[in-house]
Amino acid sequence: MNSSEPIQVLPFYYRAARNPDPGAVTITTLVTPSRYPVLSRLASHYDGPISVAVPFQSPLSLPSLHEFYTSNPAIVEHVDIHLILNSPPRAFNTWRNVARAFARTDTVMMLDVDFYPCTRFAERIQANQVALNLLADNAMLVLPAFEYASMDAGRYTSLFPVAKRDLLPLLDNGEIGQFHGAWRPGHAATNYSRFANASAGEIYKVKDYHPSYEPYVIFRRENAPWCDERFIGYGANKAACLFEMYISGRSFYVLADDFMIHQSHQYLESTRKAERQLNKKLYPTFREEICLKYLKHYVDSAIMGTQMTHNAKNECMKISKVRKRFPMVSPFWNEARWN
Image (cartoon, rainbow, N blue to C red; front, side, top):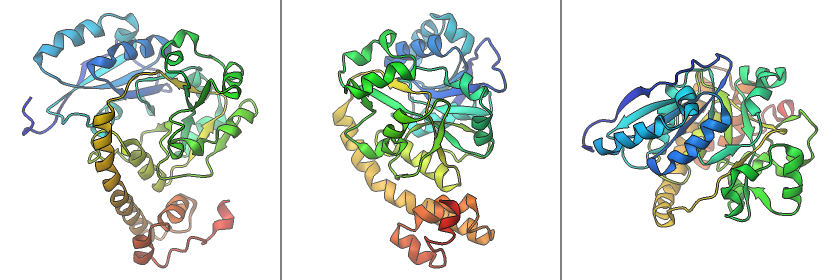
C-alpha cells in the first residue's frame, strides 16, 4: 500500500447473492481481519443485508478474505464487501461512509461489528407505523446498548437474553449495564431507567442530549450528513457523526422493546489513549464549525425558529464563539413550543 496515493474503493468486491428487500434495514459496519469471526456471527444471526467496509491490508490478505467470505452461507447470501485501498490505519469514519454509501436499502443502521443485536428490531420497525413515520421524518432510532459486568460472560452470545423480559433481571442485579458505563455521556441520554420501565411498543424521544452521545442508530440515509473523515482512530469519531446529524435537524428516539449487547474483547489501550487525545482537541473545533455552518444556513434561509432548527438553536448556543457570531439566535426563542 502506498500511503501517498488517494484512497480508492472497490465497491461490491463481493456482492451478496440475495437482493435485499427495499424496506429492509441494512447494517453498515467495518471490519478488519481480526474481527472476521464476529462478522460471521452477526451475518448468521441477523439474517438481513449487511454492507461492510474492509480496509485492504496487502495482496497476501486477499486469500484469507476469500476464505472468510465463502466460509458461511449467511455471509454469501447477505453481506456486501467493499474493499478500501490506500486508507490510513483506523480511519473509522471513512470506512463508515463507504459502508453507508454502498448500502442497497434506504434505511441503514450504523453499527460497530462487536455488537450483537439480541432482538428482531428490523422486523419490529417494519411492522410499526409509528417507527416508519419517525424514519420518514428523519428521526434516528436508537437501539439501546448494554454490556456484561464480567468480560467472560460477554463472550458467549448463545447465552445472551433474546427478549426484554429476560434482560431486565440481569439489569436489576447488576450483571448487565449501560455500555461503557464508566463514560456516562456516551450513552446515558438513552435513559436506561426509562427503557426499563417503558410500556411494550413504546418509542420515546431522547431529551437530555450531550455532544458525547454516541448511540447506535437506524435512519434514512437520504440527505443524511456524512461522518467527518478528519477523525482518525478512537475517541469522538462516532459522536461527531451523530452531532452533525443532530444539528441538521434529526432527533433521537429510543426503541424501548429492543436492545443489543457488546461482545467482550480486549482493547489496544495504548493506541486508544493517543488517538483520544488528538480527537479530544479536534472535537470542540469541529462542533463550532458545524454550528456556524448550519446556523448560517438556517438564518440565510429564513427558517430559524422552525422545528428543524430546534436542535441547533439549543445546542449551538452553549458555545461562546457561536453565541457571539449569532447574537440574534436566542436559546429561549420558541422554547415552550417544542418542549
